[in-house]
Length: 160
Image 1 (tube, rainbow, N blue to C red):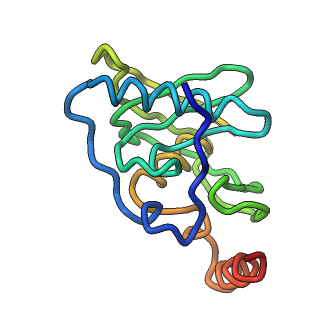
Image 2 (image 1 turned 90 degrees about the horizontal axis):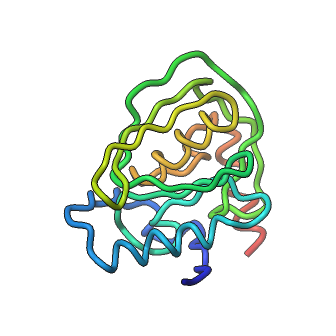
C-alpha cells in the first residue's frame, strides 16, 4: 500500500493514548498494510500506529527478519532486566541507554480477530515494551533519568 511519513516529537499524536480497535474495517486493513510496509526497512524494529498519525492500538514489528503486526496489544507480563541503547523513529538521531524488562509478553488480535501472543527477550522484549509505551502515549526518553531526559530534549531542540 504505502510507506508512511513518521511523526516526530513534539507531535501531539505521540503523547495521546491510542483508542482500541473495535471493528476490523477496510481502513484498519489498510492501516495494517501501511504499518507493515513502513516497518519493512533496515534498522526498523517496530512501528506504532500513532507514529504514522493514526490514533489506534496497533503496531508492526521487524525483528530478526520476521515482520508482523498485532492489534489491541496489551502488555501482559514482564520480568528480568536489561539495559541497552534504545532509539526511536520519532526521536531521530537520539540513542540512550534505557532500562527495560528482559522478557515481555503481549496479547492482542490479528485481522481475523484471532488471538496473537508475541513474546521474547532481548531486542524482541525491548520492542514489545517500546511499542506498547507508544500506544499509551509515551516515548522512551520518558524512562530516562531526569538529567538524561533534559539532555535528550536539549539535543532534540538543537536538531530542529
